[in-house]
Length: 88
Image: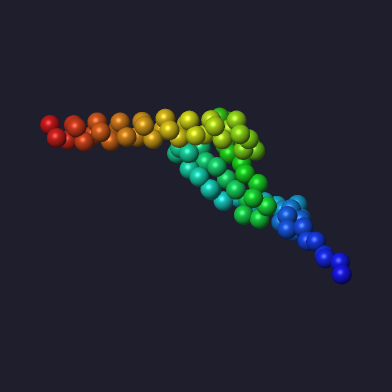
């Protein structure tokens, strides 16, 4: 008896090649930088410094992680300053 092997990744890739990708925001790094994932084929993109979508490579993943950390620290400091100024 022969087993039929199915290619689970074939249909989503065909769908995207015919109809195009359907990107949804998977992570908000900062107000302007976001990471996107195609809901069908799971291809990941991010925005570069010019605002264009590019493929999410390990290099850009690391850049986004550092950028997110800096952004969160800046927001925390801003909130602390407004809290301290409202007390006085």
